[in-house]
Every structure is written in C-alpha cells, then in structure tokens.
Length: 227
Length: 227
DNA sequence: ACCTGAACACCGTTCAAGT
DNA sequence: ACCTGAACACCGTTCAAGT
Image (cartoon, rainbow over all chains, first blue to last red; front, side, top):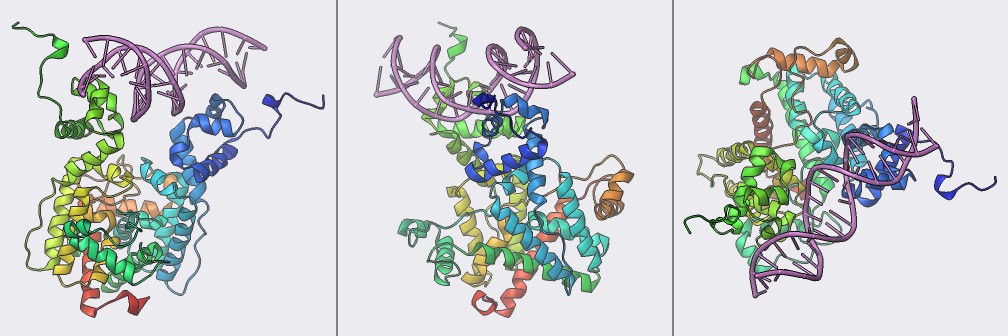
C-alpha cells in the first residue's frame, strides 16, 4: 500500500481555479496556439473529459483565463490628479499584459466582457468621474482609449526588420516607411539599432490622449454641443 | 458530347486571384470561422489539394485576403490641409473594413505586414510628411494611430445589452458602467435606445488624435527634447 | 451517480499512388 | 509531369458503456 498506480496517483483534486492557473501557465510557456483541451488535460495528468466538469467548454476556459490575468492588475491608487492615477493603473495593466503575451489576443477574441474586465472598466470609469469628467465625456473617453485601458494597443507592425538598414529595393518601393525606420534606428530609443521602443510609443499615445481629455474637460465639452 | 460529367464541368481555370476573391466572398457570407481550406475548395468545385497550387498554405491565403481588402481603400485625395486628407482616407478605410467585418481580426493575426498594407502605410506616412510633420513625429504618430490607420480600433465591449436598462443587480455591482450605459441610451446618438454610435466614437478619437498631432507639429515637438 | 474510453465530425497538410 | 485520393496527426465535444 506504500505504492499507488502511477497513472492514478492521488493528487490535489481538480477545481476550476487549478484548471485556470494551469491553462495560464501553459499558454505562458508554449503560446496560445499550443493550448488545447487535450494538451491541458495531459499537463494536469487527467483525461480530457475531466476538464468539462469544471469548464463548460473551451470558450469558458478562455474567459476564465482572461479573468485570472485581469485580476493581476494593481488596484487603483490615489494620485495628485486624475491623470496620474489613471496613467499609473494603465501602466500596471501593461506590465501584466507583457507577462502574458497571449492575453491581448484572447481578450480581443471574447464576444462579451468577462466579470473581472467589467469590474476593471467600472473602476476605471470611476477614476474619470472622480477626476471631474462628465458621464458623457467619460463615455466617449473610454471608447477612445479602447484596448489601451487594459494596457495594450494594436501594433500593425511588430518591429522593423532588425537586420541592418532596409534593403535598397524595399526603400525604393516604400520610401516613407524606410525613412521612418531610419529615424527609429537613429535616435536609439531601444538597445541596439533597429526596432522602436514600444514602451515609449505606448506612453506617447497614452499621454496625448489623457492631455486631450483634460483639455476637453476644462472646456466643458459635451457631445450635444459638438454633434 | 453535348453533356459533360457534372462533377468535372470545364470551368474558368483556377488562379490565385479567383481563389482570393472566393475566399473573401465566403468570409463575408459565412464568417471567418467557417472559412476552411476544405470548405473553400468545395465552394470552387475543386478538390482541397488543388488550392495548394495557388497558395502555399492557409497563412498565405489569409495574407492574400488582407491584401485584397486593403486594395479596396480609396487612394489619397488632396485636401485643404493635411488633417482632412488623412481623415478622409482613414474614413474610407473604415467603410471598407465595415464591408468585411472579419478583416480587422485577420489583419491583427498576421505576423508581418503584407505588401498592400505596407504600400498603404507608406502612403499614409507620406501624407503626414507632406503636412509638415517631421520624420520623428510622423513615426510616433503612426504608432499612436495603430489600427485606426486602417479604419478600425479595438472595442472592448461590442454593444451594451440592448434589452432595456441594465438589471438592478448589474447596476449595483458596476455603478459607473451603468451610468455610462444610461448616458449613451439617453442622448440617442444611435437609432433606438441602447447602444452607442460607433461611427461617432471612431471619429471622436480620430479627431482628438489628429488635433493633438497638429498641436505637437506647431510646437516643433521632437522626442529628443521630451524623452 | 459518477467517470471515461471510444467515436464523431471536423481541421491543415503530407505523400504516395494513379493518370 | 501533373493531379488527387487516402492517410496522418491533430482538434472540441458527444455519448453510451462501464464502474
């Protein structure tokens, strides 16, 4: 009785939380494309169908993973002004999202917001309202921020080719892109040569938007007046 | 000889363009999730493997579909100022993307920009440069625009529940969200009651950014001075 | 009542056999 | 040389048979 069958070793019994944490860890380690119900079950030493006792289907698994990740974002902090409070929380969200590179894509793919996302957005709206923005302006401001509220934004190009300067024929075909790439490589915002500083680009857009919002707030902007 | 075998009727021979146009039409009609190599082949009255003569694999098919769609965006038009030229083109891109609701998600999923996307971005960068923005500022501005350059942006919530006002317990749990939903329903920017006017939200953020860029241009902003 | 193996209806893609 | 059917290695999920 000191040995149990290896295939049925008595383990911490499965529960939803353990399933979700294993799924997040697996996605972190192997990427979201390699996350399948079968692969996850294998990781948990469980038969695939055992997962369906804790999540209804794969969609619910992905929803749960999103909530797990969004739950890692730091709570709101008091700041000298509304802008720095919002800014700090968004940058915290960004650090979380960078730890889980698959999360942005999964969040995008959800049809509706999950409870943790709703709670986060509600709290963020509260920060805008506390800062003196009208409900009307807050509404449009939330839309304008889009995914940036959660610490990420859609980058259309990952990183310019890091292998030296662009090829001559590419520069000829896309002269303006080549000029931008040359500029980025020149001011060395990032380690060596190629690529741009994603963090700088994120904060550039974030601050431009926050400043724009504050300016509208000061003007007493309303959509009725401008529509 | 007046009849041919129904299963091998002589048709316009397949070529890459015909494959891509059929794929776009199929995605338009049935959604991107229903687009499989096998289903597309069936639509073209062709055996699945025949597609692989014209596209290397499914990734290349999706790349080609993106290029087909981006090719529908209107060329740049001359405007009284750089802002209205850029604005007009982006709103044209938006109309194209609304015709192909699957395209935004597919563009996001590409690892690198396709030729037509590069050409579009190059032309857009040219518009900023012609407007008097420095190469440095143009670079950051392109990043700040993100997917908005192509006429879409990440909406975190599709549309608030259209079935009347939010339930009491939801309003209690997410008071600020409920307030925003009530505001949106109130000012009736969209047809009846619930939901917000996506076009308004898009233009609100677009104009806020364009105004911010113009303001930075006037100030002679450079990243070196502000870093 | 609970658990689970086999099966179903799909995928994208390889490959060898047919013409 | 070209084309293509069958096969491979996967999916998520159903379902009936086992305990």
